[in-house]
Structures are given as C-alpha cells and as structure tokens.
Image: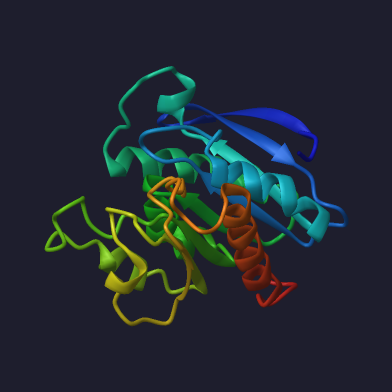
Length: 217
C-alpha cells in the first residue's frame, strides 16, 4: 500500500469531514473518492486504487463524509451528502491539479450530481446504484447520464443494484468486473480470484484516466 501522505480535517456545512491523501509520483491529477452509505474508505476498491494509482502519477484523496467522521451508522439524505462534498472541494482542488470526482455507491451518486458544477475534470462511478435491489423501475440513470463530463462506471457482474447489462446506452464508459457483487466481492465458485478482480478494476480505471485531457480542470 502506498504510504499515506497526510490526514486532513475539513469543516463543511454538514460537519467535519476527513481526507486521507496518497500523494502521486509527479502527479498531474487528483482522484477524489467518496465512500458508500454502508461503509467507509476501507472498501476494497477504494483501497486498491489508493494503493496503485499514485505510482502512475495520480494523487488519490479518500474522502470521509461528516456523518462517518462523527461515528453515525446511517447516512443522511443525498442533499446533505452533496453539501459535505461541496464543502470539501476547495481542499481537494488546493494542490492546483485537475480533480476527478469519484466514489462508490452513494459516493458515486454525489460525484455524478455535483461534478460539473464544481469544475471536475471527469467522474468515476464505482458500483453506481442504478436502482434499489429488486426495483429496476426506480432508476437513477438520469444522475449518471446527466454528468456532462467524461464518466466511467465500474460495476460488478452480480451487483443487485444494477448489473452491467442493465445500464442504458450513453456516452460514459463501463468496465464490468465478472461475478462481483456491490462491494466487488466474488463468490468462491468464480473462476478468477479477488486479487485478479481488483487488478481488472485498477487497470480499467488507470487506462481511462490516462485517456483524459491534461492541463485543464
């Protein structure tokens, strides 16, 4: 794992948030990643990206929303999550590099809703919850399709919140992780291992980031 450069506490209108910085080698961009509603920045996909991308010239910032920092068990309403993210943005942009807005699950939705408004370079949506489990009619595709920015979705093949084949056509990219659930965990019967799955995720994200325009934010 890449060494943590520093922890930073940031005051927002939703409370105190926290950023864990993983500084890139000669970085040209910052990838800011928020967590989901059921967990924190210890999620395997967030940790895999924080461990791999700094060596490829991308500083990774793992963002903990105020509710999580305060030790609460239940995430607040989307509007409050957006408020926390907006309050963090100046700190994320402070290094003076283009910022890719990203996150997993609820964090992905926040990035999709606010990325263009905040001046993000692009949006990375990990395990985007396209719909509640078993409720495909409750689609959240509008959030994804309306980013107005280069967007990549990384989705598990068995994600109950939306499998890759359920996604509508759009201008975004999509990387599927075979057999992965909402947390990208694989069943024992899967023909590839957990490490291989994370390698697929990291390589897909790294390739997409390398295709983004440089020098703008």
